[in-house]
Length: 228
Image (cartoon, rainbow, N blue to C red; front, side, top):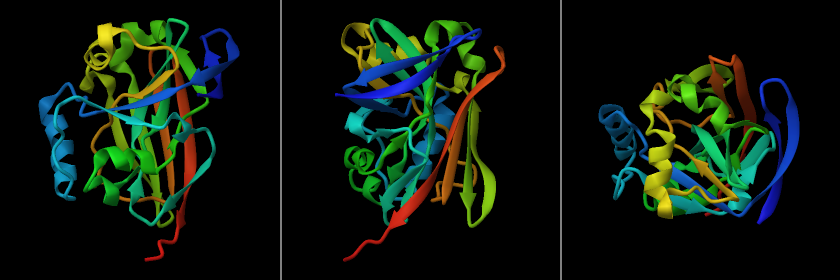
């Protein structure tokens, strides 16, 4: 277990909140639209990554991989980010944030679970109360930008109506349909525009067009040499 400090944006006020995180779950293949979901599966299959055993599927990774830093270090040049909404449980409440499921694609080709453990998972320092956004959940927008060889491009974009509803996602992944305190869960992603590829910098955001606010964060990717 370890602590992360966030700022809770409750529309008319902001409050610092330190949360104890003791588990991280990365939900995959959470698309509500089977066509879009299968497109992302096919995208990874083209890279030699096997189809998932089930959809959705819930991977586990060390909670210590969560970070709010503005840079991460990765071995080799085969990793890339993915924008996702993040749910965090605390004292019976659920908060919503935004993060990047940064993953080693070379390792992912032979073991997805291991690949999830290979890289840090950047997360923004702002959270919203789930109850403040659940009424217009499907209208919220996930978006990411990648800086590749000096050019910043739109990498992913989509509205949450393409994902399984929150209650459904929780019910399928947790005993009794109850989201546990101290759990941080990444909720799935969209296909990359132009295909999955590494970047020197990755920026991600969750936009609430109804309450007109955005959670965002960005980080540089430092590549470490692989000595064979």
